[in-house]
Length: 343
Image 1 (cartoon, helix red, strand yellow):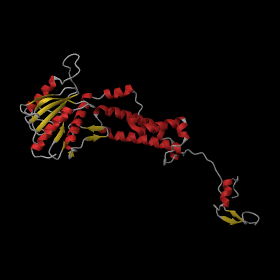
Image 2 (cartoon, helix red, strand yellow):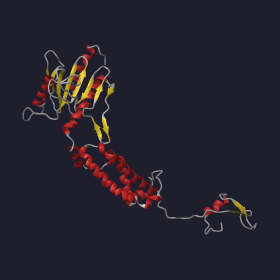
Image 3 (tube, helix red, strand yellow):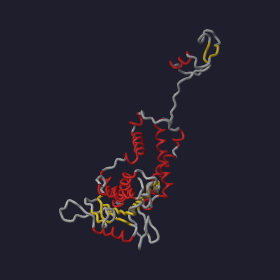
Image 4 (cartoon, helix red, strand yellow):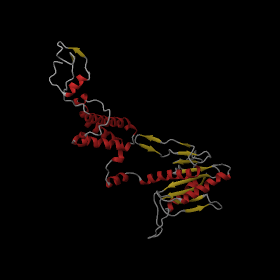
Protein backbone atom coordinates (compact mmCIF):
# COMPACT_ATOMS: atom_id res chain seq x y z
CA UNK A 1 0.00 0.00 0.00
CA UNK A 2 2.86 2.33 0.75
CA UNK A 3 3.96 2.14 -2.88
CA UNK A 4 0.81 3.84 -4.13
CA UNK A 5 1.55 7.18 -5.74
CA UNK A 6 -1.98 8.46 -6.30
CA UNK A 7 -5.38 8.15 -4.68
CA UNK A 8 -8.45 7.97 -6.88
CA UNK A 9 -12.17 7.64 -6.10
CA UNK A 10 -12.06 4.09 -7.46
CA UNK A 11 -9.24 3.19 -5.04
CA UNK A 12 -11.21 4.60 -2.07
CA UNK A 13 -14.34 2.73 -3.18
CA UNK A 14 -12.36 -0.53 -3.28
CA UNK A 15 -11.11 0.08 0.26
CA UNK A 16 -14.57 0.90 1.67
CA UNK A 17 -16.26 -2.07 -0.01
CA UNK A 18 -13.62 -4.45 1.30
CA UNK A 19 -12.23 -5.57 -2.06
CA UNK A 20 -8.81 -6.12 -0.50
CA UNK A 21 -8.07 -7.98 2.77
CA UNK A 22 -7.37 -5.79 5.86
CA UNK A 23 -4.72 -5.96 8.53
CA UNK A 24 -4.62 -4.19 11.88
CA UNK A 25 -2.70 -0.93 11.79
CA UNK A 26 0.19 -0.18 14.13
CA UNK A 27 -1.69 2.82 15.50
CA UNK A 28 -5.43 2.97 16.23
CA UNK A 29 -5.47 6.46 14.76
CA UNK A 30 -4.82 5.10 11.30
CA UNK A 31 -7.13 3.21 9.00
CA UNK A 32 -10.78 2.32 9.31
CA UNK A 33 -11.37 1.15 12.86
CA UNK A 34 -7.63 0.61 13.29
CA UNK A 35 -7.39 -1.43 10.07
CA UNK A 36 -5.57 -0.84 6.78
CA UNK A 37 -5.81 -2.79 3.53
CA UNK A 38 -2.89 -5.08 2.81
CA UNK A 39 -2.78 -3.77 -0.76
CA UNK A 40 -4.73 -1.52 -3.08
CA UNK A 41 -5.16 -1.37 -6.83
CA UNK A 42 -3.63 1.65 -8.52
CA UNK A 43 -4.62 2.57 -12.12
CA UNK A 44 -1.82 1.91 -14.53
CA UNK A 45 -1.67 2.67 -18.24
CA UNK A 46 0.47 0.79 -20.74
CA UNK A 47 0.68 0.77 -24.51
CA UNK A 48 -0.72 -2.37 -26.18
CA UNK A 49 -1.41 -3.50 -29.73
CA UNK A 50 -3.86 -6.14 -28.52
CA UNK A 51 -6.95 -4.09 -29.39
CA UNK A 52 -10.30 -5.30 -30.79
CA UNK A 53 -9.52 -3.55 -34.07
CA UNK A 54 -6.15 -5.29 -34.47
CA UNK A 55 -7.72 -8.62 -33.56
CA UNK A 56 -10.22 -8.04 -36.36
CA UNK A 57 -7.44 -7.29 -38.86
CA UNK A 58 -5.53 -10.41 -37.76
CA UNK A 59 -8.66 -12.51 -38.25
CA UNK A 60 -9.22 -11.03 -41.71
CA UNK A 61 -5.64 -11.82 -42.77
CA UNK A 62 -6.04 -15.39 -41.49
CA UNK A 63 -9.23 -15.77 -43.57
CA UNK A 64 -7.38 -14.59 -46.68
CA UNK A 65 -4.56 -17.02 -46.04
CA UNK A 66 -7.03 -19.88 -45.52
CA UNK A 67 -8.69 -19.17 -48.86
CA UNK A 68 -5.33 -19.14 -50.67
CA UNK A 69 -4.27 -22.41 -49.05
CA UNK A 70 -7.61 -24.05 -49.90
CA UNK A 71 -7.50 -22.93 -53.51
CA UNK A 72 -3.92 -24.17 -53.95
CA UNK A 73 -4.92 -27.56 -52.52
CA UNK A 74 -7.74 -27.87 -55.06
CA UNK A 75 -6.06 -26.41 -58.13
CA UNK A 76 -5.25 -29.89 -59.39
CA UNK A 77 -8.97 -30.55 -59.94
CA UNK A 78 -9.58 -27.25 -61.74
CA UNK A 79 -10.31 -27.22 -65.49
CA UNK A 80 -7.08 -27.07 -67.50
CA UNK A 81 -7.91 -23.72 -69.12
CA UNK A 82 -7.99 -21.90 -65.78
CA UNK A 83 -5.49 -23.94 -63.75
CA UNK A 84 -2.42 -21.86 -64.65
CA UNK A 85 -4.21 -18.58 -63.99
CA UNK A 86 -5.47 -19.76 -60.60
CA UNK A 87 -1.98 -20.89 -59.61
CA UNK A 88 -0.50 -17.53 -60.65
CA UNK A 89 -3.16 -15.60 -58.73
CA UNK A 90 -2.73 -17.74 -55.61
CA UNK A 91 1.04 -17.33 -55.76
CA UNK A 92 0.76 -13.56 -56.11
CA UNK A 93 -1.69 -13.21 -53.22
CA UNK A 94 0.37 -15.52 -51.02
CA UNK A 95 3.47 -13.45 -51.80
CA UNK A 96 1.69 -10.27 -50.70
CA UNK A 97 0.27 -11.82 -47.52
CA UNK A 98 3.38 -13.62 -46.28
CA UNK A 99 5.47 -10.59 -45.15
CA UNK A 100 2.43 -9.04 -43.45
CA UNK A 101 1.65 -12.21 -41.53
CA UNK A 102 5.30 -12.58 -40.45
CA UNK A 103 5.30 -9.18 -38.71
CA UNK A 104 6.15 -9.44 -34.99
CA UNK A 105 3.11 -7.27 -34.23
CA UNK A 106 0.72 -10.23 -34.49
CA UNK A 107 2.50 -12.19 -31.74
CA UNK A 108 1.07 -9.70 -29.26
CA UNK A 109 -2.46 -9.66 -30.74
CA UNK A 110 -4.98 -12.14 -29.41
CA UNK A 111 -7.79 -14.05 -31.11
CA UNK A 112 -10.94 -12.27 -32.22
CA UNK A 113 -13.80 -13.23 -29.89
CA UNK A 114 -16.52 -10.86 -31.02
CA UNK A 115 -16.84 -8.51 -33.97
CA UNK A 116 -16.20 -4.88 -32.85
CA UNK A 117 -19.09 -3.56 -34.95
CA UNK A 118 -19.45 -0.38 -32.89
CA UNK A 119 -15.80 0.61 -33.16
CA UNK A 120 -15.35 4.13 -34.51
CA UNK A 121 -11.74 3.23 -35.33
CA UNK A 122 -12.90 0.56 -37.78
CA UNK A 123 -15.54 2.76 -39.31
CA UNK A 124 -13.60 6.00 -39.63
CA UNK A 125 -9.85 5.48 -39.59
CA UNK A 126 -8.58 5.10 -43.17
CA UNK A 127 -6.67 1.82 -43.17
CA UNK A 128 -9.02 0.07 -40.77
CA UNK A 129 -12.00 1.23 -42.81
CA UNK A 130 -10.49 -0.30 -45.97
CA UNK A 131 -9.98 -3.63 -44.20
CA UNK A 132 -13.57 -3.55 -42.92
CA UNK A 133 -14.82 -2.93 -46.47
CA UNK A 134 -12.65 -5.73 -47.88
CA UNK A 135 -13.97 -8.10 -45.23
CA UNK A 136 -17.53 -7.28 -46.27
CA UNK A 137 -16.72 -8.02 -49.91
CA UNK A 138 -14.99 -11.25 -48.96
CA UNK A 139 -17.94 -12.46 -46.90
CA UNK A 140 -20.51 -11.35 -49.45
CA UNK A 141 -18.81 -13.18 -52.30
CA UNK A 142 -19.75 -12.50 -55.90
CA UNK A 143 -23.14 -11.01 -54.93
CA UNK A 144 -21.34 -8.09 -53.31
CA UNK A 145 -18.73 -7.45 -55.99
CA UNK A 146 -19.16 -3.96 -57.49
CA UNK A 147 -19.29 -5.11 -61.13
CA UNK A 148 -20.05 -2.56 -63.81
CA UNK A 149 -22.35 -3.38 -66.72
CA UNK A 150 -19.46 -3.80 -69.20
CA UNK A 151 -17.74 -6.19 -66.80
CA UNK A 152 -20.91 -8.28 -66.48
CA UNK A 153 -21.21 -8.45 -70.28
CA UNK A 154 -17.57 -9.48 -70.57
CA UNK A 155 -18.03 -12.27 -68.03
CA UNK A 156 -21.08 -13.57 -69.86
CA UNK A 157 -19.38 -13.42 -73.24
CA UNK A 158 -16.66 -15.84 -72.22
CA UNK A 159 -19.33 -18.50 -71.75
CA UNK A 160 -20.53 -20.72 -74.60
CA UNK A 161 -24.10 -19.49 -75.03
CA UNK A 162 -25.06 -22.59 -77.02
CA UNK A 163 -23.87 -24.79 -74.14
CA UNK A 164 -25.72 -22.64 -71.60
CA UNK A 165 -28.88 -22.96 -73.68
CA UNK A 166 -28.44 -26.72 -73.89
CA UNK A 167 -28.12 -26.95 -70.11
CA UNK A 168 -31.19 -24.79 -69.64
CA UNK A 169 -33.21 -27.00 -72.03
CA UNK A 170 -32.16 -30.09 -70.09
CA UNK A 171 -33.40 -28.74 -66.78
CA UNK A 172 -36.48 -27.30 -68.50
CA UNK A 173 -37.36 -30.76 -69.86
CA UNK A 174 -36.79 -32.19 -66.40
CA UNK A 175 -39.22 -29.61 -64.98
CA UNK A 176 -41.84 -30.53 -67.61
CA UNK A 177 -41.57 -34.19 -66.62
CA UNK A 178 -41.74 -33.28 -62.94
CA UNK A 179 -44.90 -31.31 -63.63
CA UNK A 180 -46.60 -34.50 -64.85
CA UNK A 181 -44.92 -37.17 -62.73
CA UNK A 182 -43.76 -35.38 -59.59
CA UNK A 183 -40.27 -35.67 -58.17
CA UNK A 184 -38.08 -38.47 -59.59
CA UNK A 185 -37.38 -41.37 -57.28
CA UNK A 186 -33.74 -41.46 -58.25
CA UNK A 187 -31.34 -38.87 -59.69
CA UNK A 188 -27.73 -39.65 -60.48
CA UNK A 189 -25.49 -37.32 -58.45
CA UNK A 190 -23.75 -34.68 -60.53
CA UNK A 191 -19.99 -34.37 -60.70
CA UNK A 192 -19.15 -31.47 -58.41
CA UNK A 193 -15.81 -29.86 -57.65
CA UNK A 194 -14.74 -26.68 -55.92
CA UNK A 195 -14.76 -25.02 -59.34
CA UNK A 196 -18.19 -25.99 -60.64
CA UNK A 197 -20.76 -28.69 -61.38
CA UNK A 198 -20.45 -30.91 -64.42
CA UNK A 199 -23.81 -31.99 -65.89
CA UNK A 200 -22.53 -33.20 -69.25
CA UNK A 201 -23.34 -36.89 -69.62
CA UNK A 202 -24.02 -36.85 -65.92
CA UNK A 203 -27.71 -36.37 -65.22
CA UNK A 204 -29.97 -39.43 -65.18
CA UNK A 205 -33.38 -39.16 -63.55
CA UNK A 206 -35.79 -42.06 -63.04
CA UNK A 207 -39.40 -42.15 -61.83
CA UNK A 208 -41.13 -45.04 -60.09
CA UNK A 209 -43.27 -45.81 -63.15
CA UNK A 210 -40.17 -46.50 -65.23
CA UNK A 211 -39.89 -43.16 -67.04
CA UNK A 212 -36.27 -42.05 -67.41
CA UNK A 213 -34.41 -38.95 -68.59
CA UNK A 214 -30.74 -38.96 -69.59
CA UNK A 215 -28.52 -36.05 -70.68
CA UNK A 216 -25.92 -36.67 -73.41
CA UNK A 217 -26.45 -40.41 -73.52
CA UNK A 218 -24.16 -42.15 -76.03
CA UNK A 219 -25.37 -44.58 -78.70
CA UNK A 220 -22.90 -46.97 -80.32
CA UNK A 221 -23.33 -50.16 -82.32
CA UNK A 222 -22.98 -52.12 -79.07
CA UNK A 223 -24.93 -50.15 -76.50
CA UNK A 224 -26.93 -47.04 -75.61
CA UNK A 225 -29.67 -45.63 -73.40
CA UNK A 226 -32.60 -47.98 -74.23
CA UNK A 227 -31.26 -48.48 -77.74
CA UNK A 228 -28.24 -48.73 -80.03
CA UNK A 229 -26.92 -47.01 -83.14
CA UNK A 230 -26.91 -48.80 -86.47
CA UNK A 231 -23.66 -47.13 -87.46
CA UNK A 232 -21.68 -44.22 -86.02
CA UNK A 233 -21.53 -42.85 -82.48
CA UNK A 234 -24.49 -40.56 -81.76
CA UNK A 235 -25.10 -38.45 -78.71
CA UNK A 236 -28.47 -36.62 -78.63
CA UNK A 237 -28.68 -33.95 -75.97
CA UNK A 238 -31.62 -35.53 -74.13
CA UNK A 239 -33.24 -38.95 -74.22
CA UNK A 240 -36.58 -39.75 -72.56
CA UNK A 241 -37.75 -43.34 -72.19
CA UNK A 242 -41.40 -43.97 -71.35
CA UNK A 243 -42.70 -47.54 -70.81
CA UNK A 244 -45.34 -48.31 -73.40
CA UNK A 245 -44.24 -45.43 -75.62
CA UNK A 246 -40.56 -46.03 -76.11
CA UNK A 247 -37.59 -43.75 -76.65
CA UNK A 248 -37.96 -40.04 -77.50
CA UNK A 249 -34.96 -37.85 -78.35
CA UNK A 250 -34.46 -34.08 -78.05
CA UNK A 251 -31.68 -31.81 -79.29
CA UNK A 252 -31.15 -28.20 -78.15
CA UNK A 253 -30.19 -25.81 -80.95
CA UNK A 254 -29.48 -22.18 -80.14
CA UNK A 255 -30.30 -20.93 -83.61
CA UNK A 256 -33.30 -20.24 -85.83
CA UNK A 257 -34.30 -18.75 -89.16
CA UNK A 258 -36.85 -16.29 -90.55
CA UNK A 259 -38.47 -17.74 -93.70
CA UNK A 260 -38.92 -14.34 -95.34
CA UNK A 261 -37.47 -10.90 -94.80
CA UNK A 262 -39.64 -8.92 -92.42
CA UNK A 263 -41.30 -12.00 -90.87
CA UNK A 264 -42.04 -11.72 -87.16
CA UNK A 265 -42.18 -15.47 -86.53
CA UNK A 266 -39.11 -17.69 -86.64
CA UNK A 267 -38.65 -21.37 -87.45
CA UNK A 268 -36.11 -24.09 -86.77
CA UNK A 269 -33.36 -24.50 -89.32
CA UNK A 270 -34.03 -27.17 -91.95
CA UNK A 271 -30.66 -28.86 -91.34
CA UNK A 272 -31.61 -29.34 -87.70
CA UNK A 273 -34.78 -31.17 -88.76
CA UNK A 274 -32.62 -33.29 -91.06
CA UNK A 275 -30.59 -34.26 -87.97
CA UNK A 276 -33.78 -35.54 -86.34
CA UNK A 277 -34.41 -37.80 -89.34
CA UNK A 278 -30.85 -39.07 -88.94
CA UNK A 279 -31.47 -39.93 -85.28
CA UNK A 280 -34.56 -41.95 -86.12
CA UNK A 281 -32.86 -43.72 -88.99
CA UNK A 282 -29.72 -44.58 -87.00
CA UNK A 283 -31.41 -45.51 -83.71
CA UNK A 284 -34.21 -48.03 -84.44
CA UNK A 285 -35.62 -47.74 -80.91
CA UNK A 286 -36.23 -43.98 -81.27
CA UNK A 287 -39.95 -43.28 -81.68
CA UNK A 288 -39.50 -39.53 -82.14
CA UNK A 289 -36.80 -36.85 -82.38
CA UNK A 290 -37.37 -33.14 -81.68
CA UNK A 291 -35.47 -29.90 -81.93
CA UNK A 292 -35.72 -27.51 -78.97
CA UNK A 293 -34.91 -24.00 -80.17
CA UNK A 294 -35.50 -20.36 -79.06
CA UNK A 295 -38.02 -19.62 -81.81
CA UNK A 296 -41.77 -19.19 -82.26
CA UNK A 297 -43.12 -22.01 -84.44
CA UNK A 298 -43.81 -25.60 -83.46
CA UNK A 299 -43.75 -28.09 -86.32
CA UNK A 300 -44.65 -31.76 -85.99
CA UNK A 301 -44.33 -34.38 -88.73
CA UNK A 302 -46.03 -37.40 -87.20
CA UNK A 303 -45.98 -40.95 -88.40
CA UNK A 304 -49.26 -41.97 -89.98
CA UNK A 305 -51.87 -42.77 -87.35
CA UNK A 306 -49.80 -41.48 -84.39
CA UNK A 307 -49.64 -38.23 -82.50
CA UNK A 308 -46.47 -39.09 -80.57
CA UNK A 309 -44.15 -40.64 -83.16
CA UNK A 310 -42.30 -38.57 -85.71
CA UNK A 311 -39.93 -35.63 -85.90
CA UNK A 312 -40.30 -31.87 -85.48
CA UNK A 313 -39.43 -28.88 -83.35
CA UNK A 314 -40.74 -27.15 -80.22
CA UNK A 315 -40.07 -23.55 -79.12
CA UNK A 316 -38.20 -23.37 -75.83
CA UNK A 317 -37.24 -19.91 -74.61
CA UNK A 318 -36.15 -18.98 -71.08
CA UNK A 319 -38.97 -16.98 -69.56
CA UNK A 320 -41.35 -17.97 -72.35
CA UNK A 321 -44.28 -20.38 -72.58
CA UNK A 322 -43.65 -23.92 -73.84
CA UNK A 323 -47.20 -25.24 -74.20
CA UNK A 324 -46.41 -27.35 -77.28
CA UNK A 325 -43.61 -29.24 -75.51
CA UNK A 326 -45.70 -29.67 -72.36
CA UNK A 327 -48.69 -30.97 -74.31
CA UNK A 328 -46.53 -33.37 -76.29
CA UNK A 329 -44.96 -34.81 -73.13
CA UNK A 330 -48.47 -35.26 -71.71
CA UNK A 331 -49.49 -37.28 -74.79
CA UNK A 332 -46.40 -39.45 -74.55
CA UNK A 333 -46.98 -40.09 -70.83
CA UNK A 334 -50.61 -41.02 -71.53
CA UNK A 335 -49.24 -44.32 -72.81
CA UNK A 336 -48.40 -45.17 -69.21
CA UNK A 337 -52.12 -45.46 -68.46
CA UNK A 338 -52.83 -47.58 -71.53
CA UNK A 339 -49.93 -49.82 -70.56
CA UNK A 340 -51.42 -50.27 -67.10
CA UNK A 341 -48.74 -48.22 -65.36
CA UNK A 342 -49.84 -45.58 -62.84
CA UNK A 343 -48.00 -42.31 -62.30
